[in-house]
Structure formats: C-alpha cells, structure tokens
Image 1: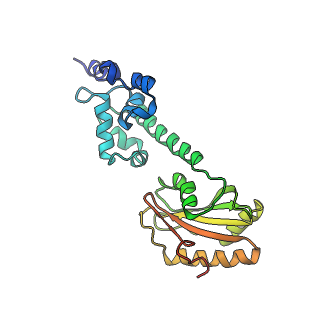
Image 2: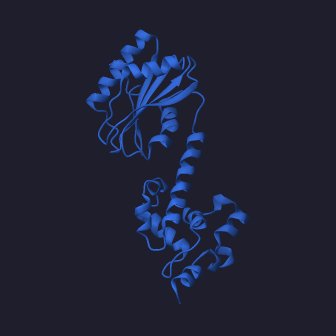
Image 3: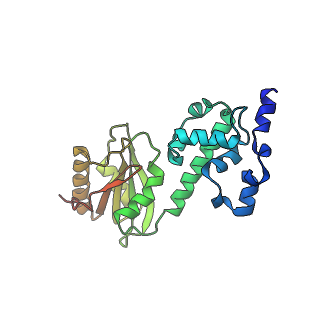
Length: 235
C-alpha cells in the first residue's frame, strides 16, 4: 500500500461514523469535541502509523496538552511530525491565532475595575510573546476603556519605555486615566528595579499632567503582578 492510500485510510473518512469529528460536531456541537478532534477536522489525514486523531493527540501531548503552547510552535517545528506538511502546520497555527483573537474580543471589558480586569484584557495579547512589550490602557475618568496601545517592544530580558511617549499617547486619545502593562517572557512575575523605576517616574509625571496611573501590571501566561494590589503605585 502506498503512503497516499495509507494516509487516506487513516483520515477522518476511515473512522467509524460515531467517531468522525465532523459528524460529531454536527450532532452534538463543537463543545462536545476534544482539542484533538477539533484539530483533526483541520488536518484531515493522519499517517500509516497514526490516525489523524492519534496524530493530533501526539502533538498535543508534546505541548503538555496546552493549546497556548501549541500556538507558540513554528511551522518548521510542526512539520517535523510525520504527516504534517506546511499547509497543515499553517492551518493549525491559524486556528490557534483565531482562538487568541476571539479571546481578546471576549475578554475586552468596557470598564477596568481591578487588576484582574487588566490581566483578562491583556493576557490574550501578550501570552504568546517571546520578547517584552509594553502596552498602555487608555481610559476616561470613569475607567471606561478608550483604547489599548503598544508603547514599546524590546528583547527577551527587557524593553525601554519612554514616559513622555506614554503620556503623549494618553493626551492624543484624551485619556485621563491609564494603566501600564508589560510581559515577562520568562514567566517570572517579580518586578525588576527598572520596572519599579518606570512605575514611579510615570506615576509622578502623570500627576503633573493630570493623568492618573492606576496600575502597572506584569503579565505572564500563568499569573500577574499588580503594583496597585501591592500598594506600590507611589512608593
């Protein structure tokens, strides 16, 4: 049997009717499918050794069954799996990106009432970043979000933030309240001395410009640090 025939036999069509993810989705809804089954719909075929669902289970296991980690894989990394070519790898990563963007829309709170709201708003934007970025959430006096803007992009261990640029961005958007947010790709939520200095400088400069800095949140994939929660905004 050639590879083409083997792949066809290990595709979705070769599965028992009750196990076919497309039919299962039609009957029971998308929420009834496992992550592997959803990915199998995109990929379509497996290999001579693995059915398409088994192949997706294999890849997910290598990502600790974490869709976020899967989304961080490169095309080349996915193509290292037998049965995954460029087209399939791109389809998988495109699905992960769509999921992230949907999360960004659903978690976009109109009002910021706590550090948890800031984390929920910013995590989808920052969880997959491999370098540090700094963003500012621009709000009106009632803490209603006006816009979210990127103000700096740096390296793995840090990013330079111009306080004047942050305040200029706030003035252009007519924001009276802001929250600063940056990520730590290392996963460590502990602020650095540079983070402390930036928070203090922006807090003091904001008071002069009558722009209130309500929080500075450090985002990681598994948690966050809030200067406001730690009562360290003005030191």
